[in-house]
Image 1 (tube, rainbow, N blue to C red):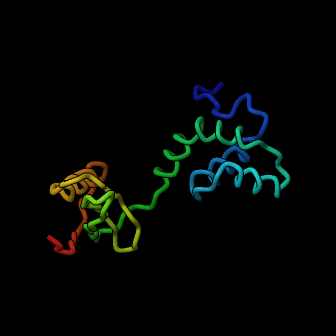
Image 2: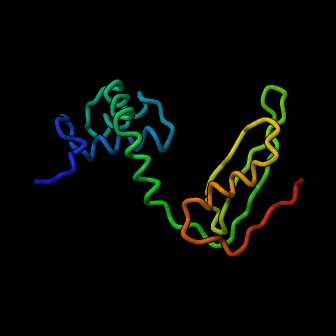
Length: 141
């Protein structure tokens, strides 16, 4: 007897179909009806409301699984600061990118956030077992 409950117990469709629907909806920013059409083209008849319920129920577990399987970040990081205007106000958008071009994290937009780079850096280092070898900035400020 297993101690962990099966997430998909009691559902009409198998776990593979539910995962496919949630994956299409979350990863590709498709509408519920577009996911319904894609699944119908594969011979799976499921309504868009069912896909919405699956997304609400399994979306968080799916996102956690994706985060767990992310590749390890490289040892060279670029902290990038971009100015954007939203409704006439200037905001900072901070991004952290490794040497392979993988976006590690994004922080923003918060108005007048001058400590954003430090906040992003501390947030990134919090979950790592090691520190990056090189950290580059664009020296925009």
